[in-house]
Image (tube, rainbow, N blue to C red):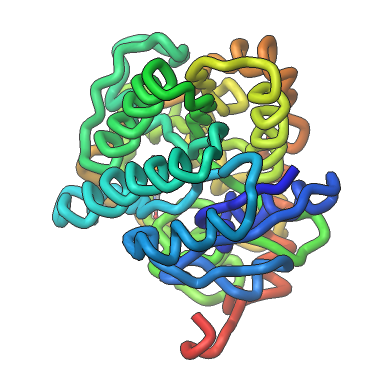
Length: 332
Ligand code: UDP
């Protein structure tokens, strides 16, 4: 297949591009490189904004693509609360422009990076795809609004879509060549591993008084390559099924912040000093997926999502690339 990957220079996108190329697909990445990395893209790359309608349309027109994988988005929850316009414009309005451009070129298949943030603070666990969707921030709102647009566009225009609702992406490519490199970094595992590398004195635990077994938040960490593999399965699905589909992608269990830190100590053999801090605003106590629909309908099996494998692959990446992809600013 010929596949256009928006946001293919980012964390989940770049791992997916790797699997697509290995499977023999022809891939073009479209990325503004604001958060993505040129060094993470081993195939043709168009550097452009989703908001640049002309370039987007020209790219789609030139490529004769069979499908689009749409990763490009901003994904900082706190920033989305402080600056919702940025999220509505980029994640929603520019996403809709992508759908317009696809329609104009007759591209009728899309796999969309959605998120468990569409569920907000669920009242029941594990979270199924039918759990009430009540986002608690503009990031989740924009992702949910786009999912809903996909459904209506499917009905009206015949667009086929799969929305993949990621839980907590973690880990890195086992060969050590691709990994997580966010600026700023806000995610737990890379922040803990920075302490192991001596780049930070301690990690803060955001809240130790939650109603969870050890008082810290539970999250469903899932290996980035398991997420990537689901995109290829979703493309297979779109070859035969027409309607808008949505799947939870989590390993199906909650892991606490303290358990993550203990795993990092085990894997690295280094002591990680912690500081117990206040809760972070907007953090639900526990989020974990019921992933049975993805297993049943996509044939998805998370293979690398045990905690120690996720931490070990992340550790290999961070040890080998202590400053990330380390590109000169001009190349970004
Ligand atoms: N967390 C923490 N200290 C940090 C970063 C995160 O205790 O420095 C906690 C956070 O409160 C949440 C979990 O780790 O319960 C995962 O946070 P992350 O930001 O990685 O992902 P999120 O679940 O917010 O998408």
